[in-house]
Length: 576
Ligand SMILES: Nc1ncnc2c1ncn2[C@@H]1O[C@H](COP(=O)(O)OP(=O)(O)OP(=O)(O)O)[C@@H](O)[C@H]1O
Image (cartoon, rainbow, N blue to C red; front, side, top):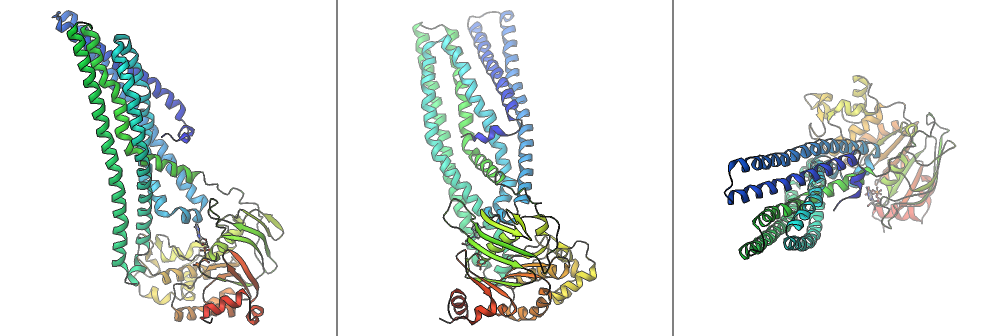
């Protein structure tokens, strides 16, 4: 129920102690309130004068004020702490997203991260409230009241002590059922968020393919699943609240009957009977409060755990091992026995024992079936994912990984799924070169085959794209990315992950000529499914199931009539 990591949050221990102190004080206020009320009632029953009743009624009123005043103080302390802590957690989560980078987002899902940073944090706020206030009330108040009840009336004390564990047991049973339901409800919520965001992002593509209507059904289905999971959690929550209320009310009623009988038999004076009866609902109240909110805050616990899980993903710190350099014809990157796995808990190794050398301005094609590991290799070479093991040497410098500032400043990366920032087309093109002039940007758009498209836009290069702007097709986005590469002068490495995947073959051929110009004086790493690019490449890596199945100069491999390269290219050409 309580995530132990909660107690590691900054400032929580002093707050916990302060709240515990206030709760003890509050328990005494509740006790005094009951004592004075019972005394007032007993004296009224004995028809005592107002002079005797007055100070008791005043004391009752003070205890009442004290009790609620303490609740107000506790809530204020808690609110202030919860708001500050969730705000800090949100900031840390966003900072972690920036430092761990795109690979972590791909793994966790952007929708999941957005949900966590927005709604999730509100849920965490509720979770703090449950644990730091309601749980604490439950652990302190009933026991102080019970000591007094025992002192006044042993039998009532025993009844109340016996009922408590039964209720707790009952809560645990229902709690377990609710926990599973809430976890699967939260998981479904994450699926829904990721799905919804993916659908929004892919809307243009879905429309282009005429699949947007069909996809509505898909979203409906995911929302339906979430609705069903929510209702099944609510069903348990309502059932347990009902059962708990019923059980505690019944216990109080039984106690009242016993007290009434004892009063009638004359075995118990009026005061202990009255004070016990007033205290009995107060004894159960913290438990009921806790139980009624428990289910609602399970999501808070899930969100809290998810946030901490993201925050504890190790971040790369040694980013500056490489001195300043510029990749040139003599540069050399050697990789030996590199292994990488996205998920350590599974057997799937995504890059297995890779050995390769990249040097100078060679053009390297990376080919392989879908899922062979081309993108993963490019991500490892770009330093966006960190290999678990491997020997990396760059110009003689031994490195643990390629997430090195100096290395990352050497290349232009064109991902398979282009992402455009919510900004103008011109600024999206200026990504690597923010100071580029309008003329330079214009020239880059022409080289990337974008000029015609831009001419159709009323605001031209100043048209806003991305989430808050005009929707554009995958091919147009890819050409905007390509324009970045044309614009930047001082980066001598091009890492392209299927840069023409979204383009039709005519556009691709039209662009090929200018792209070949760009490839001059660059180390080119080019993942592709289209074989015609091989003619323009010097070297090829054939990937199969995370391994380099074959590598060598293109001309040499093209002459071989057997082996992985021959088989893959025959298969891709449709020759069996
Ligand atoms: N973010 C991720 N988390 C977990 N597994 C992943 C992730 N990205 C890729 N994988 C897995 O790694 C393996 C290699 O995927 P990768 O995208 O590198 O292949 P690819 O050769 O580029 O495929 P394609 O040609 O379809 O783009 C696949 O089994 C894939 O499921």
